[in-house]
Length: 119
Image (cartoon, rainbow, N blue to C red; front, side):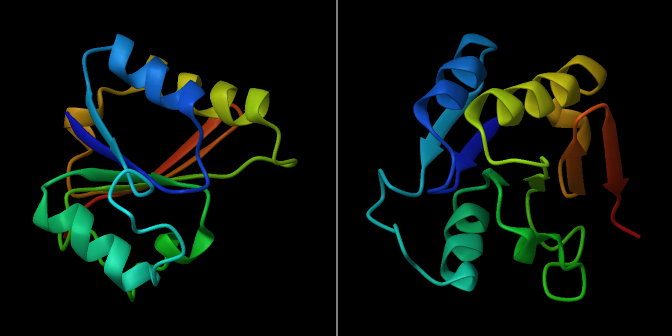
């Protein structure tokens, strides 16, 4: 799966995803650090990359409707510690293949995954 990591996600997740065979790019690699959410979403969509982020704004399905993008995965953890973010993403990957989530809006939490599929 082609994936784009938002600027708030680190190299640990890049390695984890790359090791699982995903093609990973980052917002920072493209010089989009600090860019507006719409610009980041448009870049991910134009490159057909699923966006992984901590930014809750991307969970707004009125703004980023399922099916209007290659997929959005929003990771929500109680404290922004890299270890918790990794656990939440690992939990998602243990339950679902990213390819199955194409076009969906996904909220990955510790022990829970919520999926909004395109209608």
